[in-house]
Length: 432
Image 1 (cartoon, helix red, strand yellow):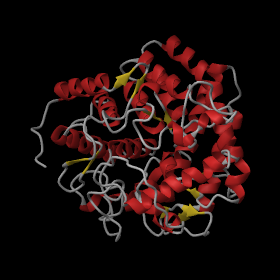
Image 2 (cartoon, one colour):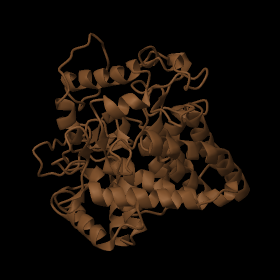
Image 3 (cartoon, one colour):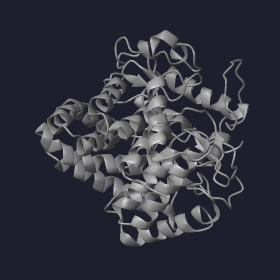
């Protein structure tokens, strides 16, 4: 694919707003036209972050619309379905059958899985950058009990390994669906074949993997979304460093937001300490954090962009930060790529520059790594990641992901997450 002509900041900003306006349906923003017609948890939260410096009310509406789908258990689902196109995506509401579960929200069909708990960080980002502090504080007070319930759900229902970390129970919960990290635990599942039809963009896993993904979702659904089933019988349970790094960061900012809601920040700081201890004890190996398959007891042999998630923690020991930065700058990642940051280490046999989360660069992953580096004062790399990410969207547009060597766009076009986070980078005065 040929790169587009480079565009200046003003034109890039106008283009980003155009994408977000076109993809807005009521209070929610769909990830992309056509293929993703509903509200996705991970994407919508990044959209709120991207809007935070520009439109407090719209950013808040994005979060509140998503949390309208929160279950009474505290679980925030990974998809909130919009009735107008309820079955326009597979698996849709008729597969998840959320309405049959008494814990699900009345009148709002959702999936039965969750995604990384970025929501407190998004609420903090909105509050931090709002021009109208009272409006932002009112939003925080409204969101706070929902965020507390979400964190309580993770601590009580998802600590399947007993070490203080949350386990994901499906690759879709990671936000990085097709990462090679899931190859071994998914490969251990039985071979299945379903007679369904789903449009998949180029770069997704083979049908055999997608069928196993559906099988996993159906197993969990048929248990009645039961917590005991997850603990005792569900065949996929993985402690993911990115998911838990985000959870830790959200615990810390929730402690900052707690006084606005008249609450005690102490429990959130204690939770952050437990997650940090779990990450260091259970996932650190060979200079990076690795995902742990709880069913096999093995750590993933492949390093991906998710390995750097725990750097979002300002309390991460300095020696671990230095080792992680060394890996990030090495030829395994940024040192051999033309654009930041390959989603899988380049030297790994699983690396594929054209397949989702197995090589391509993503704006949202770059944004998270940039934030993590800023937390630890690495302003040189903060500037490098910001400029490199803007160079991608200037050249190829607001694509879902990008080739890390030539910068060409991959996946869907007019991707909301990429557009929104571009606005945040532009507001931060990121330059070449």
